[in-house]
Amino acid sequence: MRTVDELIAEGVRGRRVLMRADLNVPLDDSTGERVITDDGRIRASLPTLQALREAGARVVVAAHLGRPKGERDDRYSLAPVAARLGELLGVEVPLATDTAGSGAQAAVAALSDGDVCLLENVRFEAAETSKDDDARGALADRFAALADLYVDDAFGAVHRKHASVYDVATRLPHAAGRLVATELDVLTRLTEDPQRPYVVVLGGSKVSDKLAVIEAMLPKVDRLLVGGGMCFTFLAAQGHGVGDSLLETDQVETCRRLLAEAGDKVVLPVDVVCAEALVADAQVKVVPVDAIPDGLKGLDVGPNTVDLFGQHLADAHTVFWNGPMGVFELAPFTHGTRGVATAVAAVDGLSVVGGGDSAAAVRQLGLDEDGYGHISTGGGASLEFLEGRELPGLAVLSGGAG
Ligand code: ADP
Ligand code: MG
Image (cartoon, rainbow, N blue to C red; front, side, top):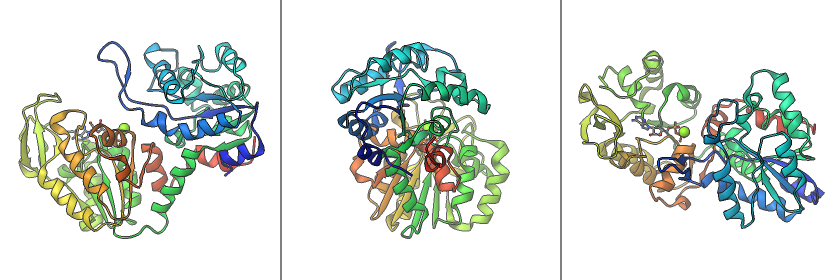
């Protein structure tokens, strides 16, 4: 896999480089204005972007934001991202008026050496995520016409077979950005001969998203700690009532089988923080897992669970953590995530945080990012990598130049 630094060594001055970045940041629009609540992903794309600029490339950044429905929708415009990127770079970053049409062509034509422009949200084009190879190919042709070279630095999107991630790389000479290279380096250390004990902590909202990774990782890890919304399907599989907590009834049977196969490798919460509703001033009740009241939702793991998980993490030498332990976005439900995040940071060895929300939680809760060996920008991508699946965006970078 060629890296952007090799590409730069070959000379990029005056060349148009299409750089796919992961700028899918969380936004708060409750004030009527769209405010970026965590710019971690924008900052993570700066090293590659700066290296290209300093080498005199004309950088055309492509990115997605949220899930617009394949057509222009200003609620998903990258305008706030262009503004923040410009602030961080200290130069103006013009936003093209479209993704790959005449607006994009005009923005690219206006670039001088070392300049950067941002294309509008790639998901304004229905073809970006299409299952139809020809539809994606036609969009990729339009992307390719905007540039001479392609650099993929969007680690968070490499598991997607999308036009701006996959197809365009078959049409232009390509390289991996620095962020993608770093992510691969660290995740490879987790899959190849991790120092033991190796403990994985999983949380977040959806079990069905993560069952495959649990299945694939169980044989490789020494312990798997499960919290977050997904723990309730496991608790239900053990026969507990879970009140109004998140429950994926169609996954209960699979969870039961996984628990049977895993023996005592899987560690579940022993207490939970419950409330009637997901609100910032919720009245909370902490209960043991066998006494979750009807009508209440489990929205965080309890203090005894934080202690228990902490004990399991204390002697670990390799840790991968994905998924918040609770609804950390709301003050009454931050403690579980804070406690576990703190225990992960204290690990003597390699600690990796993966997942957009988990990384955002670390920063939002004011924890020291330097406490972790690595904070991955890609949740789904890092999980699929750890599952051992082939990721289309990486596979295509390893292939020959288009
Ligand atoms: P990541 O982005 O790190 O991979 P996920 O997207 O899987 O994480 O999950 C993050 C979401 O899970 C957060 O928005 C959080 O509020 C939610 N969550 C965590 N615990 C619970 C719970 N008990 N009930 C409902 N949602 C939860
Ligand atoms: Mg998420």
